Length: 492
Image (cartoon, rainbow, N blue to C red; front, side, top):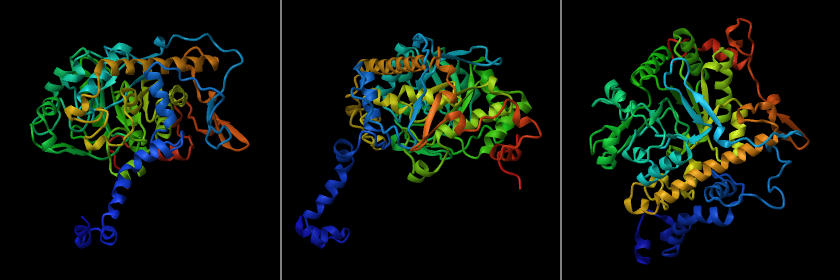
């Protein structure tokens, strides 16, 4: 080995330090594990802190998650957040009542959704056993499981849990041989009573504006059958949709999906990018009279999908800013009461849910939180097919470690115990239901000596404000003037 190291020409360290130089590779290989288990602080979010993961594990196992001896958080640190409590707390509400009706006047089959559901994660990204456990947990806990854009697999159907069918630009499960939208195949799948809502995906927080490719060697017969693609052929997910090219066309496509699904709630998901593009969609809603039943706001915090570093770190709007923008735009356009809003982005605790509800969301979705409930240890190897706990892999030996009945029960318990904690928080705040949470209940420290209510920190538009000719809101007014219902692009 020493001789080989001395004469090889690719690695300078090994030429100067034969054999010993190889230790550098070994240390680099185990660095993430050493950092996570021995060096990382309890509150270092990389991307989820040990404290966050421990909370999920405890609730998923029905263990006590109470903490003795006071908080470990620095309550005087800039950015610390909390909910103000009431001198007159309310009786504890039943978490089973924490539901929101989704489906407007155009939806003949509305859905009564939990305010906490499983976010979009596709079969292919997750293993068959992970999908089975998530869906069985959703069935046991009576909440929804988003399929992700990979389509409805046999493993989604085994246990009969409620599904939100996500349709991306690849139209998996409802595509022609050339990859375009197939209304006949869509209608067949949408008729399944297990499918409760249809979600059109415009972009996702992990890699907004970025398409994808699944190499042909990874397109197994199972994945091919689920997605409706040929076995062994490269599977392309385009960066944009082929079924529409303008906001007006998009609204008509949503109406088509609603008609083909026989009136099931139809909406769309996006990670907000150019503000005028979303505002153009809202103008198209008003112009056509076609309104989505819901909008899911996905934050740039990312998710289970692997992405180029620049996309993960420097593209897309964070969830809270996105949520506030979408909520304000709908309020300002006078249509907020017609559309429900879901929010997804690093939600694992009751406070996370409360914070986004206070900023305007009607319900929340979690992806990685439910992965922790399945036993994910944040090894950051989701894209390698070598997940050590069988969650994010297609390796049959590795996914064998994930025992479905046990993990499904953990999924159910995580959901139930998180909503119980939310019930306790809202009761302490003097509220009967989480839907009553507003920005005036949430507080953030902005300096060592000063705190502010969220209602003081953020701009909140008045109902119909953007429709008047006199509004002057800097960012909102400027973007609204740029928005066009007949095109996404800016006009010079």
